[in-house]
Image (cartoon, rainbow, N blue to C red; front, side, top):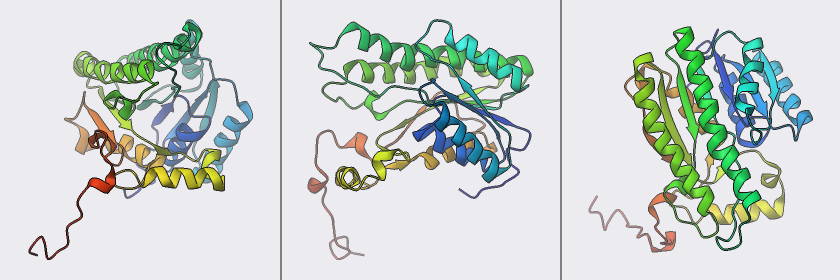
Length: 277
């Protein structure tokens, strides 16, 4: 997408789970559109989050503030947005990205692990979206909310029952929010990526990178979606082209959702002669 450096000027983007990996990469990209950035992390890597913020300020010249809050804790969303409102007086684009990708055998998963996934992936997302919508509505801002789900919402993967069910719940939440927020002209969309090239350390480890490249070759488009692409989608939805779009889930996974257990080796590749072109 062509970048207009002034598009997000005087606008604010708040991304949860953005101290590192996918959220951090998305934040860096969105800052290039001129948005001021609110970063959030859980408290596990304050140094990494501050490093991301410095890079955003230096490379894009926008304001970037870091907030820390553990979304597994009760009332954490309220505390997070109390912090946010002390630093920013508006919110134009909110991206609910915070999540835990974890699994466990259905017959052995313990309640503590289940509760952690539930509190971040479902409760945390629900209430951060709620507080973001309240700010937009109170300020009279025709804002955009983006929920980052996963293609696990439609793909059945052994060992990921709680995770997949909660990601599907986010898709349904998006539909309900679209209806209830429409009187305020607040739009909401769910992005459901598969494997993400997110800048995490595993992508710079030669051995792990070889494994990831091998996985990518099993996808129809033979590539992972990048964090920058997810950021571009999020900004695109705020433009005039997205004015009538709300409540839907967009699967961005290189076609993985359509494999249904098939191998890419089973997808026929036709020559131009066979196609009579």
